View (tube, helix red, strand yellow):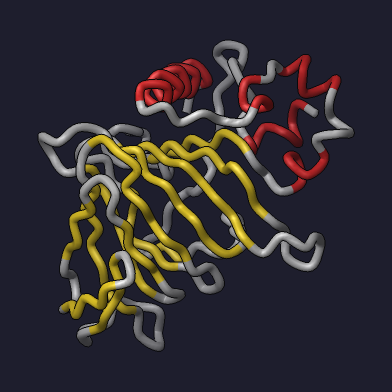
Amino acid sequence: MKRSEINKILLDAKSFMAQKQFILPPWAYWSVEDWKENKESAHEVIENMLGWDITDFGSGDFYKRGLFLFTIRNGKLHVDKKPYAEKIMIVEENQETPMHFHWSKMEDIINRGGGNLVIDLYKSDKEEDLSDLPFSIKTDGIVRNLQPGDSIVLTPGESICLEQGIYHRFYGEPGKGKVLVGEVSCVNDDSADNRFHETIGRFPVIEEDELPIHLMASDYKTFL
């Protein structure tokens, strides 16, 4: 992805979150110079990869297959005491996050406002493929019995609990607008805990055609 594309997505995300009155922590808006000045005190932010995260999953078309995320808080296994994580995401209409599950992470996905979020679901089998067996999940604590490939539509305020091994792909319902999506989970490790059903790229290679407005979490090692 080009840095100019990332910068535009980032600016659009800031505008949408402001409309929804979702306020990020102050360091979210730091410049590169601010990061360099505060590097030592922001050790947890850097080491636990908090912050901006924009990916096209290697598709080359962010608005068809991509996701905006911001990791607000996250622990690090065997390093610190924090056992939980929180993210905010923005999902465009028909913008796919590909089918995947997590080996370790259990998570709640919450529609925080905007349009509707569609989630396609399967249980995984012993070979980590899509199972053909029925299964159950919970939405806001209510049990839902599903067939393989069934979809759940989350309207604003609704949530789903995804246990380990549950395959899921999601996208914004067409005609309903972009969606502000929350995630509350166990400690998150995106570098090692995503089992995608197909081979994809999680973090983009960035072409530096202009300066970054804000650093991505994946930028810290490069710029700091």
